[in-house]
Image (cartoon, rainbow, N blue to C red; front, side, top):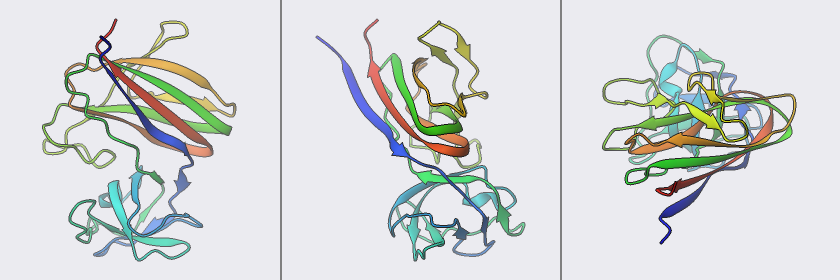
Length: 206
């Protein structure tokens, strides 16, 4: 009997550059023509100075080029870090975060379109509750980037290096040893152009 679950982590999603953020409560993010709607879940990664903007949050009070950040569950306003206005980074529709407990292997299908130039990394956590992937790693928000195996040639890619597309679209498959993780997802960590589609198969089969 087969023992597996399938997930679509990202479905042809295009990250968008973050221009700036206010160091205030709530944080107001500027991202030109972002296309998000109120109550959408988004992930921000790589934002500097006002690093409290990094992570998975809901959107509120959006305009064409800005939106406020609120907690994904309580919808409480997210406060700035206190160090000044932020800059840089990317924002994308929040990837799905599967519960991997009980499975041994994750197989990832990684597809790009639009002559992509981007990097994405597999992130896993052994925590009992879902971490805020993309936010600062800490003892209370613990996760790490995981090594993957390219099923085309059995080569390994360091978790901190990630899977890259460099000006050409790719269609590749990778395997991850779940290693007793509780949660796993894929985080776009750099982007210039292109869209990303990622599917994950969790299985106990060899």
